[in-house]
Amino acid sequence: MHIHANKTSGQKSIDKKLFFVIILNIIITLSEIIGGLISGSLALLSDAFHNFSDVFSFVISFVAIKFSKRAKDESKTFGYKRAEILAALFNILTLFAACGYIIYEAVKRFITPQPINAPIMILITVIGLLGNAFSIFIIRKDVKSSINIKSSFLHLLGDTFSSIGVLLVALILLLLPKFYILDQIISILIALYIIKESFSIFFESINILMQGSPKNIEIKKIIKRLLNEKKLNIIDIHHIHLWSLSPDETIFDCHVVINEKNIENINEKIAMINEILVCEFNINHSTIQIETKGHNHSVSCNI
Image 1 (cartoon, helix red, strand yellow):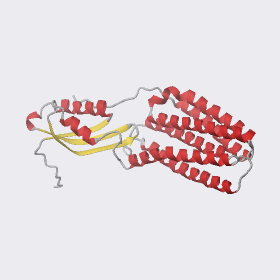
Image 2 (spheres, rainbow, N blue to C red; image 1 turned 135 degrees about the vertical axis):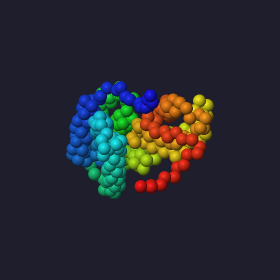
Image 3 (tube, rainbow, N blue to C red; image 1 turned 45 degrees about the vertical axis):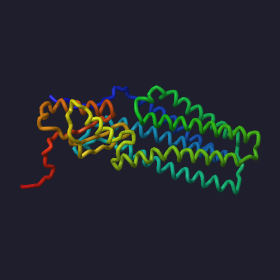
């Protein structure tokens, strides 16, 4: 009997933790937006947009976990995991627009400086910083459970550091009230940092939607490994397709040519190929077609 190789996760659900972190960071984001508008700090507003990216990132993870529990059906034979990629792409495009606006406003303020209320800026930033630190504490043990959680965690960590930068600016402005230019400088730096961090997610999302091969897996290495396995007696491998369904699920299919003399024990050969793909290349979904050298790939419909 042929046994299909699949990776399953025994991780406990972290739905409640994510939901709590989402609510907490929504409160932080709203307080930073209100505080930024009242204090006149563009740096605080840019940090709010950064924190908003954290919120959206956690929402993506939350929705992805919910959707991953849905069974595939006739209309979605691969399930609903691509929804997370579409949401991530939308998130990144929104962030690009927000960062562009922050940079535009910062340049305008270089020409026409505006006064900043440093005490309010300090109060709101401290609240945001404590909220981010608490969020990190809540999910710190679940980072290894999912690439989505890890991505969101890194966003949250980055926002914590940017909040520290905003707090330093506020403290300096408390001592040097006329040094408004520092607020614009830190705003641009935060915006550029968000854009830099977002580009990797943007290109990864595009690559997945275009059914591109994962960057961490080389097709040549897979072919070489399978051809060098003496127990398989493989002559050739062709019709190869390798693509990502989601960041943590890779799909591989190919035609494997073996000698007619070695046609016996096909199930064992397929099981060995699947084991190599799962254990050595982290490919958890594969379709292997075994054929002999004389196999004709041309198809005609004589109906």
